[in-house]
Image 1: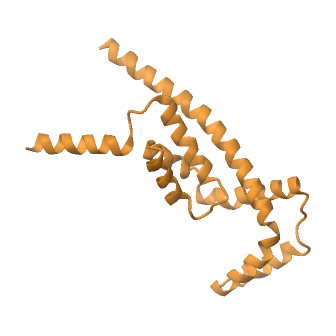
Image 2: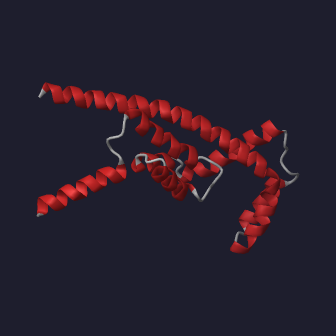
Image 3: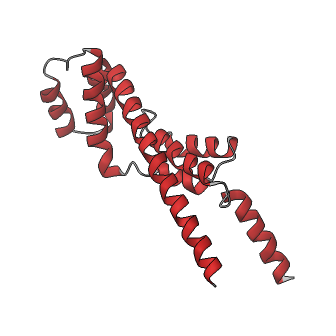
Length: 165
Protein backbone atom coordinates (compact mmCIF):
# COMPACT_ATOMS: atom_id res chain seq x y z
CA UNK A 1 0.00 0.00 0.00
CA UNK A 2 2.84 2.40 0.82
CA UNK A 3 4.47 1.75 -2.57
CA UNK A 4 1.19 2.44 -4.32
CA UNK A 5 0.77 5.69 -2.46
CA UNK A 6 4.38 6.71 -3.10
CA UNK A 7 4.08 5.82 -6.79
CA UNK A 8 0.86 7.81 -7.13
CA UNK A 9 2.41 10.78 -5.34
CA UNK A 10 5.53 10.70 -7.52
CA UNK A 11 3.43 10.41 -10.69
CA UNK A 12 1.28 13.34 -9.54
CA UNK A 13 4.34 15.46 -8.68
CA UNK A 14 5.97 14.67 -12.02
CA UNK A 15 2.80 15.63 -13.84
CA UNK A 16 2.42 18.83 -11.80
CA UNK A 17 6.03 19.94 -12.21
CA UNK A 18 6.72 18.64 -15.74
CA UNK A 19 10.27 17.71 -14.82
CA UNK A 20 10.68 15.49 -17.90
CA UNK A 21 9.87 18.06 -20.57
CA UNK A 22 12.18 18.46 -23.54
CA UNK A 23 15.13 20.81 -23.00
CA UNK A 24 13.53 23.42 -25.27
CA UNK A 25 10.20 23.37 -23.39
CA UNK A 26 11.94 23.60 -20.02
CA UNK A 27 14.21 26.33 -21.36
CA UNK A 28 11.10 28.16 -22.62
CA UNK A 29 9.42 27.93 -19.19
CA UNK A 30 12.26 29.71 -17.39
CA UNK A 31 12.42 32.84 -19.60
CA UNK A 32 8.63 33.04 -19.65
CA UNK A 33 8.92 33.54 -15.90
CA UNK A 34 11.72 36.07 -16.42
CA UNK A 35 9.60 37.95 -18.97
CA UNK A 36 6.66 38.23 -16.60
CA UNK A 37 8.85 38.77 -13.53
CA UNK A 38 10.51 41.83 -15.06
CA UNK A 39 7.40 43.07 -16.86
CA UNK A 40 5.53 46.25 -15.89
CA UNK A 41 2.83 44.12 -14.23
CA UNK A 42 4.36 44.60 -10.80
CA UNK A 43 2.39 42.77 -8.13
CA UNK A 44 0.80 40.24 -10.50
CA UNK A 45 3.93 38.27 -11.33
CA UNK A 46 3.35 35.08 -9.38
CA UNK A 47 -0.31 34.58 -10.19
CA UNK A 48 0.20 35.45 -13.85
CA UNK A 49 3.12 33.02 -14.16
CA UNK A 50 1.17 30.21 -12.55
CA UNK A 51 -1.75 30.82 -14.88
CA UNK A 52 0.58 30.78 -17.90
CA UNK A 53 2.44 27.68 -16.67
CA UNK A 54 -0.79 25.72 -16.27
CA UNK A 55 -2.36 27.08 -19.47
CA UNK A 56 0.74 26.25 -21.55
CA UNK A 57 1.41 23.03 -19.62
CA UNK A 58 4.96 24.08 -18.76
CA UNK A 59 7.35 23.20 -15.96
CA UNK A 60 5.90 25.18 -13.04
CA UNK A 61 9.15 25.25 -11.08
CA UNK A 62 11.09 26.68 -14.04
CA UNK A 63 8.46 29.37 -14.59
CA UNK A 64 8.43 30.38 -10.92
CA UNK A 65 12.23 30.40 -10.67
CA UNK A 66 12.29 32.72 -13.67
CA UNK A 67 9.66 34.93 -12.08
CA UNK A 68 11.63 35.26 -8.86
CA UNK A 69 14.82 36.34 -10.62
CA UNK A 70 13.50 39.87 -10.03
CA UNK A 71 14.56 39.99 -6.40
CA UNK A 72 13.35 42.74 -4.03
CA UNK A 73 16.68 44.56 -4.03
CA UNK A 74 16.63 44.67 -7.88
CA UNK A 75 13.13 46.11 -8.18
CA UNK A 76 13.90 49.76 -7.40
CA UNK A 77 17.02 50.10 -9.56
CA UNK A 78 15.58 47.95 -12.38
CA UNK A 79 12.32 49.89 -12.73
CA UNK A 80 14.16 53.19 -12.39
CA UNK A 81 16.52 52.29 -15.25
CA UNK A 82 13.59 50.88 -17.26
CA UNK A 83 11.61 54.09 -16.80
CA UNK A 84 14.58 56.23 -17.80
CA UNK A 85 15.05 54.07 -20.92
CA UNK A 86 11.37 54.37 -21.80
CA UNK A 87 11.42 58.13 -21.21
CA UNK A 88 14.42 58.53 -23.51
CA UNK A 89 12.79 56.42 -26.22
CA UNK A 90 9.54 58.36 -25.94
CA UNK A 91 11.24 61.72 -25.62
CA UNK A 92 9.55 62.26 -22.28
CA UNK A 93 11.34 64.37 -19.72
CA UNK A 94 11.02 64.10 -15.99
CA UNK A 95 8.31 66.33 -14.57
CA UNK A 96 9.83 69.53 -13.15
CA UNK A 97 10.82 69.17 -9.51
CA UNK A 98 10.04 65.43 -9.42
CA UNK A 99 13.13 64.48 -7.45
CA UNK A 100 12.41 67.03 -4.71
CA UNK A 101 8.69 66.17 -4.56
CA UNK A 102 9.48 62.44 -4.33
CA UNK A 103 11.91 63.15 -1.52
CA UNK A 104 9.24 65.04 0.43
CA UNK A 105 6.60 62.33 -0.11
CA UNK A 106 8.95 59.49 0.83
CA UNK A 107 10.40 61.36 3.80
CA UNK A 108 7.03 61.74 5.51
CA UNK A 109 5.66 58.47 4.17
CA UNK A 110 2.34 57.11 5.40
CA UNK A 111 -0.38 55.16 3.55
CA UNK A 112 -2.31 58.31 2.72
CA UNK A 113 0.60 59.47 0.55
CA UNK A 114 -0.02 56.71 -2.03
CA UNK A 115 -2.42 58.91 -4.02
CA UNK A 116 0.10 61.77 -4.07
CA UNK A 117 2.87 59.37 -5.13
CA UNK A 118 0.70 58.01 -7.97
CA UNK A 119 -0.09 61.56 -9.11
CA UNK A 120 3.63 62.42 -9.12
CA UNK A 121 4.56 59.37 -11.19
CA UNK A 122 1.55 59.39 -13.57
CA UNK A 123 3.41 61.30 -16.35
CA UNK A 124 5.95 58.46 -16.48
CA UNK A 125 3.52 55.53 -16.83
CA UNK A 126 4.14 55.03 -20.57
CA UNK A 127 7.88 55.37 -20.10
CA UNK A 128 7.75 52.81 -17.28
CA UNK A 129 5.65 50.43 -19.39
CA UNK A 130 7.79 50.69 -22.52
CA UNK A 131 11.15 50.54 -20.75
CA UNK A 132 10.32 47.60 -18.52
CA UNK A 133 8.73 45.68 -21.41
CA UNK A 134 11.84 46.11 -23.56
CA UNK A 135 14.22 45.16 -20.74
CA UNK A 136 12.03 42.19 -19.77
CA UNK A 137 12.05 40.91 -23.36
CA UNK A 138 15.84 41.26 -23.58
CA UNK A 139 16.26 39.48 -20.24
CA UNK A 140 13.96 36.67 -21.40
CA UNK A 141 15.91 36.20 -24.65
CA UNK A 142 19.17 35.94 -22.71
CA UNK A 143 17.57 33.67 -20.11
CA UNK A 144 16.40 31.26 -22.83
CA UNK A 145 19.88 30.95 -24.29
CA UNK A 146 21.48 30.40 -20.89
CA UNK A 147 18.79 28.00 -19.67
CA UNK A 148 18.91 25.89 -22.83
CA UNK A 149 22.71 25.63 -22.66
CA UNK A 150 22.60 24.58 -18.98
CA UNK A 151 19.79 22.05 -19.48
CA UNK A 152 21.43 20.44 -22.50
CA UNK A 153 24.81 20.26 -20.73
CA UNK A 154 23.22 18.81 -17.59
CA UNK A 155 21.27 16.17 -19.48
CA UNK A 156 24.38 15.25 -21.46
CA UNK A 157 26.33 14.76 -18.21
CA UNK A 158 23.52 12.66 -16.74
CA UNK A 159 23.34 10.52 -19.88
CA UNK A 160 27.13 10.00 -19.89
CA UNK A 161 27.24 9.10 -16.21
CA UNK A 162 24.39 6.64 -16.75
CA UNK A 163 26.25 4.95 -19.60
CA UNK A 164 29.48 4.73 -17.60
CA UNK A 165 27.88 2.66 -14.84
